[in-house]
Image (cartoon, rainbow, N blue to C red; front, side, top):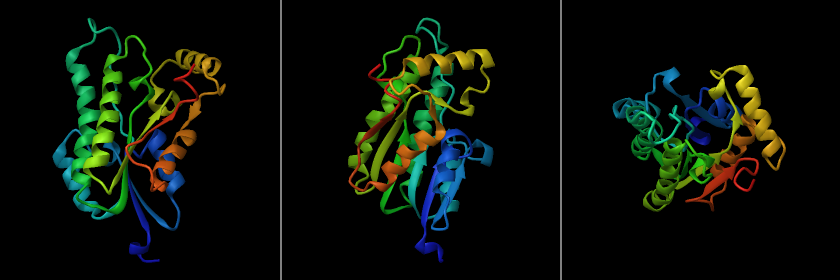
Length: 223
């Protein structure tokens, strides 16, 4: 099958966690999947790095951004502002930079799917940095859906998910966090990367969906 007959996906943040699982689910003989991250030399905080990356890819169909950042937690009186700005620079401005450079190469009928998170609307103390980043991404999703039309722009907003993002936590603390979530969530379980990846595939495949935030959190927003 010639390449022009295939659908090409670019997954930024696609070498671990949810992004890697999505790449796995999309990998078929009919698709070309490019997975990029810091591990492959793409630094979304560096616009020139992003520019060079998309020049090397050329025209493609669908962009998914799952790249995240460490966000400092704590009260506004305690959080280091420089660390908070660095988190914003990576996840928010990095996503914007990625879209800016990728838009030149997206084919008609293509899509962009961003990643926010339930803290954008789940009021939780000591999380203002991550809350602000996710809320900003959700607001921008709707603006870009108008600005980039007919390219569709959506965002997936995951809840707590079992991924390597928590691998640096002590095992006992991680187990306690998962157990507490399992007991509190209406679905009675913690999400897996495979659960969340399905939401991105839904956003990609539904050509009547744009400017939409897809909540996939086990019912965390209603618990």
